[in-house]
Image (cartoon, rainbow, N blue to C red):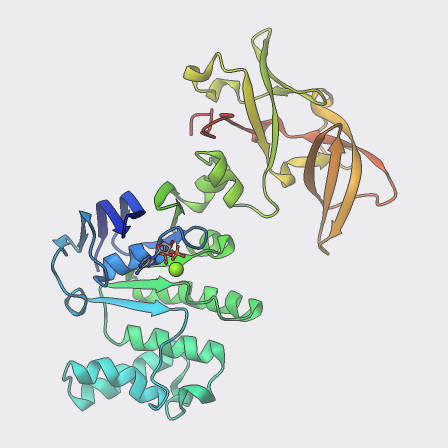
Length: 366
Ligand SMILES: Nc1ncnc2c1ncn2[C@@H]1O[C@H](COP(=O)(O)OP(=O)(O)O)[C@@H](O)[C@H]1O
Ligand SMILES: [Mg+2]
């Protein structure tokens, strides 16, 4: 068991900044997900932890021991990649045994270790097969098994499920989480997939262009995004952003633009340093907009009439794209009368967000 501490890590390739002043801690036994768009530096950070790259600045410690100068093999870290990197000419058993044989473990130990790991992963019946005789999911399990038999202090996953089809990905997501609850080893899991991040992470670190934007539980990331980038990155369909102005009216805070006017309920949480800000961006998630016809709680001051532009049928619900004047947005509606061209919508003002028009920071206290 081991915490991972990343302190002020910076890394350049040539003259390009890839990572800038990264500070991040994965607690002992934590499942930390690092999520961000392709190219933002996730793999580089993972490779730095594993010792496959050297930082320009900063330190990384694992289990309280600083790793500067410690070679990869001595870090007690196991990495699982997207391309499983199994040896094609070796059987499943021998693939799993490979690292242990290099460590000169005795045969009884190896057999016992691989048997028990094979049982957890339900791959014992595949031991004599070669990688090419396995499905994608089975190969991924063998790659996991090969990492597990080494009893590492830390698991690092680099987009391990990206090559699998959607159904299998969902199954493996659950399996890896189950595995974590059995092993209780510290795990850092890299992905560009927000669903994996939300469903798997004890906490999520959101990365952009070599920097970390927010580290929080999935609940916090979703309900209190620190900025517009985080708000837009997590959530499907994306949060709606509407530009407008703030106005004070009898102590109430109002949001206005040419087409819309709302009374904001969260004014007590409004950060006082932005008191005189006029131009803002309001954010509201599609599920926080309701059809007035079916809504349990009415709110006449925050009800608007919108024109239906397009409807996406998702089976259990519909994503309806609306327009009010020039402002476009989408709502997730369970009940919706397809034939209505115009519809009355309630915006749930307890669940709106406000962002700075330039730097995008949240104007609410977390
Ligand atoms: N060895 C390298 N030499 C030069 N540039 C690299 C090298 N490895 C990665 N990069 C660049 O660093 C950036 C971050 O890459 P990477 O960490 O692989 O991103 P991610 O895993 O988030 O997709 C990318 O722009 C990539 O092209
Ligand atoms: Mg990568």
